[in-house]
Length: 290
Image 1 (cartoon, rainbow, N blue to C red):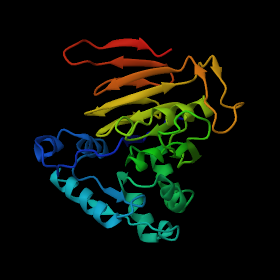
Image 2: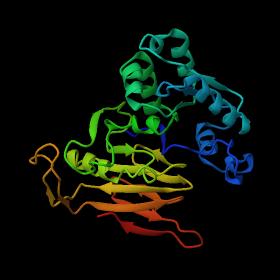
Image 3: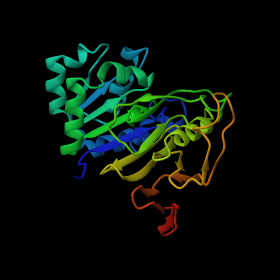
Image 4: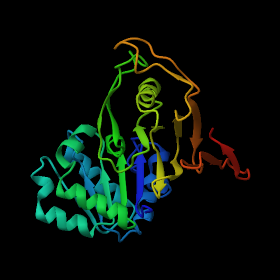
């Protein structure tokens, strides 16, 4: 059965129209990622629910998103401030989510989203709507990373690509064939995503730069949006992978890991292993990802 909903994971620090330089003015936010979220949700009258659970400053984060969506002339934006599993069972929240066209998860700590919302009544409503309706699940940074079934929970760059440097846990499971990382280029997270796909070689690694995202339809067809890049790690045809046999803290080795760099407008089909590139002023071209 084909999934009817849309996932929009974002690499963090997306343009909210509140910066000091001209790229972060209202003129540019109307061309940015949040504008695309609104469009995919059905337009400015869509019911958009912001969930700041991951954040350590949920009130401030909620206000920032409310102002950003107001700049985009949205008229039906709500905040669902969930700080416990009991909150995720609140009947008013459940009824609101049933009416929603979009849910937007903020950045912060992705494990808090899983801890407080995973496998609750609210989570079940979100999954049902994503499966059966043109419902948008958007998330930035932690809100993007939590979308996958196998979720990165931590890992620094100092020990990058030594076994155990990347910690993993179960995510929300909105999508099964990806492992998502955020702030990918600015924070140098190549090593931890490489270890993640070595550990789960049937998953494709998606490294999202800041102010960059994917629009994922049917759980498989992806379009790059935003101002940065998406780094794609495809481990599905590895020739060598010693992740399972080396000791914790030891360097790892893998071969035939395919890496692709995608930018705005590029299209990716996971099942068909194809990327369709759309460079500015050039005709679309197909390329095998194998």
